[in-house]
Image (tube, helix red, strand yellow):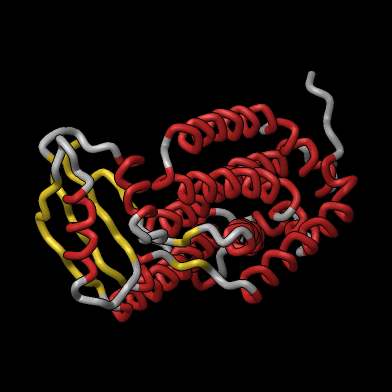
Length: 304
């Protein structure tokens, strides 16, 4: 039989760590601010096509030599197609960049397929819609958990998810990692991952209320967390290994996305144990909270 680990024995220490991380993350977020990418700030977009497969690293270095240090280069569709994005409101900027690349093309010249300018207003709309989508996801999760389990579980899950998002975004803000649509997608994925991990623990806590009738809430949580620990570790480690491979081999374009996921998975694993469960203790969850409300006399009389 697996020995029960006293996770909640250090919950006060974990609470101090949680508060410290959250405060530092919020300070970085509001003091330094997010380093928004072109998806949110607007800029120039250039689509290029080459006769032979294009070397993204070489094109990026050539742009740096030409003085375009903030250019983002990524493959687009076929290996011969590249997409270049860079800040700037000059309508001629795209053609200037295209000419600079055509001059250094050598035996693999580039031709311009399209040049577009994305204004900052479009970026602001994307940013606002992304934030609204995140809030709607959190509200929907809380409603689901309130009906699926009980409202105290919903509060615990939401507090845990907010912690994960704040810590992840705070670290990205501290290191000024470019925050674009791919990173926003990673943050939304973190919400789903952390929620899944939390629900596994919550489901076992609810089941053990029926099995361990004489156990206290803290004992129940320790036993439930221990029983799900192997599953949690297996899922987290396998996910982190996949993300690490993405960080190493994915290139610059996926660095922010994979880094956000890596931080979020670590934060989600921690929060499912030391935040979501601790909230249940603060709210004094008990077996009576999980008993369906008794039918009233009127409801009994109305039954066929």
